[in-house]
Length: 536
Image (cartoon, rainbow, N blue to C red):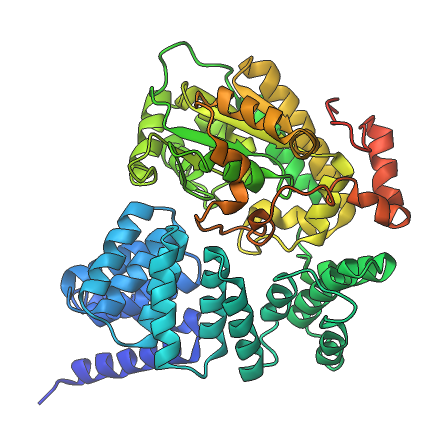
């Protein structure tokens, strides 16, 4: 007969399972962590503790608990899948794929595990595998909107836009309140006066504008479609409403000033020759978001010697680990202060080790995380033979494009992007930091103008390839034919040939941008098609 203690533990375990099923992660964590002290070899308790930590964004704890669960019971695919997910969120991509592969080898049949694995493979840029898993998920559970949305997203990355639009429509038919699908649907093509969703979106928003998610996603979708129709004042009003709904009340631009100051004040300068790890495999493409980084990456990765690796977090995570910083945030002043005397060779080696499978057998791969501009000096020191390319765009177009686009909401990189003047202030610090890097690193960084690229495609393409040490290849002029997946906000645009309609787009909104123009005028920033080169 079970003891009273055993019965009590079983009851608390059942309560922890119930908390998971309700999504009460704090309660699930409290119960499971207490139980772990009493039954540390119970795989289910370890799994719940890891799952709760994962949902509470306590990623190192999540990995630790889930690794223990897997070690105690290696037959459960859901344990391996959630471990893979936690590792992927920590940008430990190789380990995440290894755990995902082990989960798949166990032949899971439940939709939740397959969906989790699809997300992991998406984050690892294995888009075909992800799409195949999402397809299996919707076959198992055809009536769940979130699964339809994930499948649609994988189709967009792979370039199957017609099927993606069908899946988005199915998603909204299943759940008209699946708000993020409205914005994604609006972005699949340029809308026309004869064919658009404007009245439909307004009707959907009518009774839900007080809900932040609805107000953000649907207003941004409206803004995009109104702009397509040339109704610019209405478009700007909708975009502004959407961004206000999504802005974090805790954000202040002073926080960014502290971070930029820490970078400039703690950087030790260019490392001595031979201090870093010698390899020319990675090509870094960075810059403010929405400035043409994806276009440049697609041009370079159309070369047969280059593999596109997408937007990698690996360098930031490597720097955080090797710096010895104990703070929770990946990107903070403490990390840069601790990195002042980092072992540059070890940092380069760790980055290359974490990205060892990214080149896909080719001589080079591209790392296109826009915010690698924050780490440019550290990248240059750690990888002295790597190529660094910064894409610049007209300052006002840059800020407007950041304002028009919903950038990742799961990253502190983009908190600035919900208010036009916050974006302008962030641009000023970006501009100043790039001047700092150029002064510190001599000729390590090639700065290329988006406007020059679209106006002089072949000449600028030759300049890019020459800088990267690549021979000329005609495919780089036909980047739109590149069949490699694209997992950025530009996934639709970069499948079209070069176009100039984005140059000086800001003039359509000049009355609405008066305060931003005043900010730039006061700072001495040039705009209107010319590059901003003056530091502030």
